[in-house]
Image (cartoon, rainbow, N blue to C red):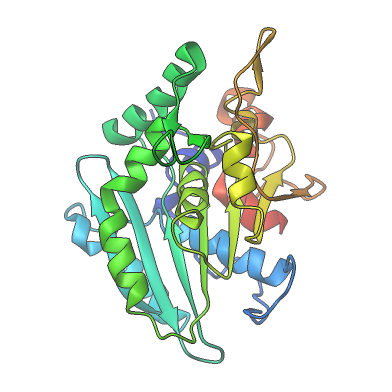
Length: 286
């Protein structure tokens, strides 16, 4: 049985063919000192586009490809990162016109066993309060979600090499949606970007981890009732988990209707806390 478009937007965002075509994109502002709605819109769309499968991932191929969409907006794909073991993907894209900047976008959860394994560790953390030190325990009290850290570790060496090859003058922005938002946040602790814009981000680590990132502009965008932004919870029953959010929070409301969502039967429409997590909702409501 086929599923409705709102469910497809939530579960299979990479199937879309309207990337960078749903809205009018104002000029990107790489020198913005604070939150920029123009930058948020661009990076929300990058966070949706990264769900589009790269040719490097093999069949079934999606046409137009990820590369095709990047070329349309004047970007060059510098590198596509992939770990088959952890099912982690990201893309580094670069442009010099009309202004120079680069985007490192991490993919969020797909309907794959690797991503489910990463997310399962989140639930194990809920139950056992397991911690993954950011560095050795003797160096820092900071700890992060173990599954997120392992997912980033799987591609980090390649990411580090490619970031070093960017022009020294080039500002780089990290971004991602859902699991990708968590990876973008973790990446900022390893390489300082110009700014981080996350969409539908879960909590990533403890307060000591958040404090280590306090000098980096991290803008955490939340779409209304998005349920993923409440995970992992700060408390389970009366016990604190230690997880806190990172960066400056920006709420976007639901005054705009859900994209391409006519009056459907209840079973055809995801519950609002899940629908608000769909990447397309972030783009449409920004």
